[in-house]
Length: 354
Image (cartoon, rainbow, N blue to C red; front, side):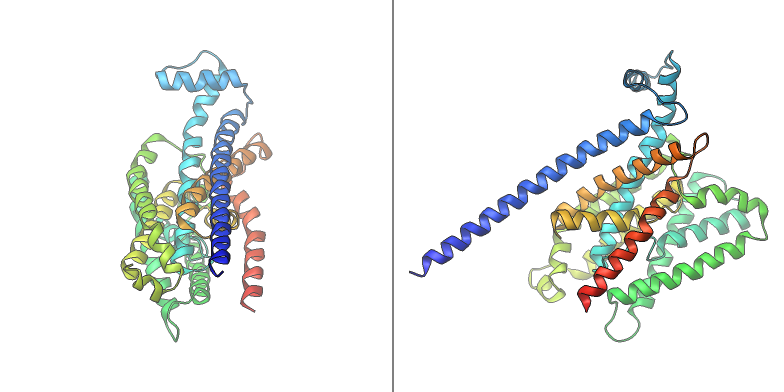
């Protein structure tokens, strides 16, 4: 008599699990299709719209290492580096945001909110103003240094007091650090017009200055960080259940958080060194993805990477269209969309806490 309800419940759970798995697969397929469409739009639109045949000709000529005859195909070839950088940067920033939200268990955590972007920017500003750096290699290591130091500082400040590093304390520490570092950036730049001119384009955040040398420079770092992120996903799921449960399941909490946090900082710093401090991608995308697929990091991380790619590609494409004959940098558009999203997330989080 008692076995029937259990069997029915098991069947219901199995059915719900299968339905959830099917939905996630559909979302992954839809995300991949969206990436392909966004890539084509990025190649098609700009100062000169091109046809599909010209896109095919431009890509084919690029693979063959030759210059095409048609002007439209040449335009497509010139857009390929910035499209590739948008793919890489969008995926890395969204993945970084997902990792930071998982590590801190804070839905409004991302590289911008926690001050990592601003720390990287300050380091680059100091390098430009005081040491005259100009190369992408120097930008990379300065941005990485600034991001790591800022992340450690925010964690230490957010851990002070009773309760340790709670989500709200980390968010407040990150916001205060961001404000302070932004003031320092302004203080360094204002008396130095030459440094300001060099830094101004980089500070806005965009992919218009893409080139293969800089992308080749950051690619190994991004690959290592992405592998570390995906390997950490099962352990992050256990940590989400609580530290005691995670320890009972054999998870090394300290090591997992260190690896995931280091991967998130590395992803953010590497992209920031090349594309500038593009904000809100790491905040918006993982939050939306969790609403669609749930909290399982094995799904959240890869789908966030695809979603970040789509978001930054569309932001860059729209920026070229609305800024014609110039362009509006992608970082401006992501901030324009992301600020209201931050307010909505914060209000929903507060209401759940109440």
